[in-house]
Amino acid sequence: MRRSTIPLLISIAAAAGFSYLLFRTVLEESETEHPITFELYAALIGVSITVILTSILLKRQTGAELRKEENVMFLELKMKTYTELIEQLQDIISKKNVLEEDMIEIRLLNQKLTFIGSEEVLIAFNSFSQCFAKIALKDGIDDDDIDNLLEELSELSVFIRKDLMSTAPRKLDSETKIREAVKRSNRNLDIE
Image 1: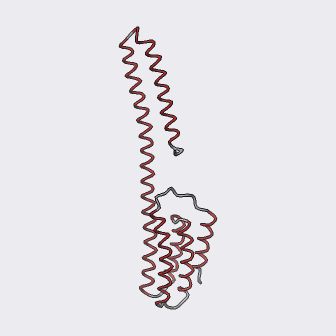
Image 2 (image 1 turned 135 degrees about the vertical axis):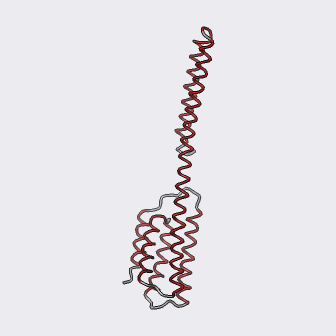
Image 3 (image 1 turned 30 degrees about the horizontal axis):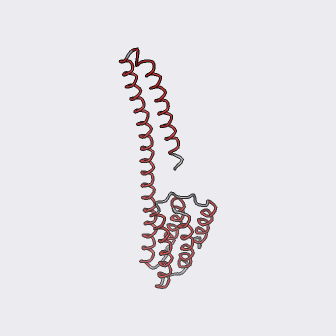
């Protein structure tokens, strides 16, 4: 049972207990003296309970819908950033040369990955950045370099896919490991 359902169950139990006590009190006092008063109290209590329970359930539903919308927006941001990385590499591979602006873009993508990527993605990108930096130091990119780069990208893609397809609640990644992976990737890409 999730912790967020406990307050809901307590609220429902409290409303039910309060309703029982109120009905019992009203029933004992009103049934014999004024039957119409009993019916009015019963209707008022029923409406009140319905309103309370409906508001509790609507609040929970609204919260769930907001979380769902946030998750969709976050997934779209991840897709955009991961796609941007692939497109940047496609550009580099097609011209078979790494320009200074390409290095800047890859370094900025490293920073963007910090915002959205899982710990596994950041560690895999670290390995990719080492390979990319070695290739960037060369004047041109040959077929072996492209193969090595694509192999590293394939490894990275596996973790990207896992990150995108994950439906389980995300555990908190180690801040220390993330920080170190990002800094290491940034140092790898600093090839001046």
